[in-house]
Image 1 (cartoon, helix red, strand yellow):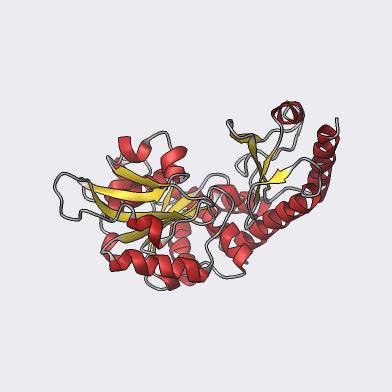
Image 2: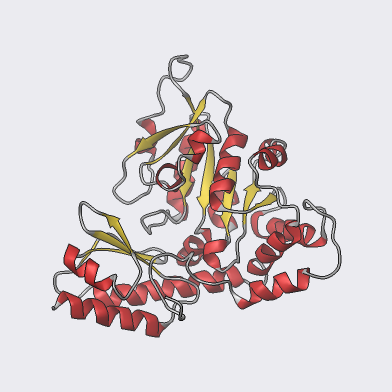
Length: 345
């Protein structure tokens, strides 16, 4: 595929937004102090406080796995564990990094929609103080979830309150936090600081960055360990100004919301186009920029000759279609036509 092409496999496939590229170019002027002592990173700190509250502290990193590993390490002691949904990225798609790098036990619980509930957490919130059991200290929630769903503000607030009542902290994996906030029609603070989240992995790459994520610490007591863990986890950028510049661009003039809202709108267009196709079944509601559906295996194989997308569950035939900040209506309509044609073949 040497020529430009479009796909629905992942929002990571999309390029960087022009405003992000322009920000990187502007940052590429003269010399700047390394390892975060630069003007771009200082500006990022101001923007993060603007969006998350005066107590927020930001630590840019290279990727989402690194953000999750460092954030979870900062909360957990060596004998402690993390409760997560069975479908959570930390459990399924990070190559075992939370276990191998951070040395953390993951207590997983099944969910039908990727969203944790107090009842699901209570399955593992047992045997506190038992030396024979890895002690649960953190619950990690994904917003929006790996299954394309999002917690409402009230759901998230009730969940955080329940976790805190058990003496645990809450980490939010926000690889697609922009899509969740845009879908809910709220700002970033409403689903983090205002509901009591302790620490956030803030995603930029899936939302139009060239390659930039950040750890946003909302509980000040957790901040001291992060700089050291970031370094020892190989997530400290020497030329940090270029990472910070990307995040600054996303947090300026609501670019994060513009990008996420467009991706979400394209997912809704895709949903509307395919949900009436005979024989195709939508897997669950669409809250962000992902559509999940069930297709016959042979239809999936034929479609993948022309379009890239993932078969989510090889056993059930469930597929995932992701829309991006640069997905166009023409992309969606062409894909819908191809699906309809193959389903009728």
